[in-house]
Length: 98
Image (cartoon, rainbow, N blue to C red):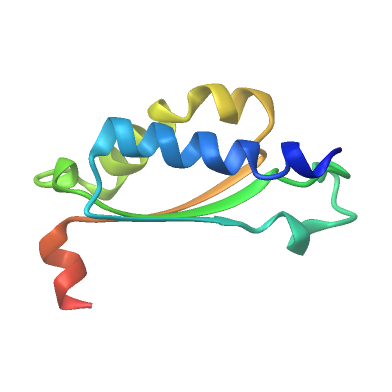
């Protein structure tokens, strides 16, 4: 893998969540290095992520509905390359209390 292609999946995740959720805050963390040697780890990395997203789109939605929304936006990545996705989804009001 070349240096140019590093971070491509992370960038796509951030772009899709930004377009789909108009987040007030978004943090996409590549956790792949923590899973080296595990069954679904690729030598190139970019298989395990944590997303922390704050969006008004989550207002009135249960935790499961929020996760389904994020998963739907990232369906292509989850079907192709991403093996694990941890999601922290909050409304702006919830984020202001933390």
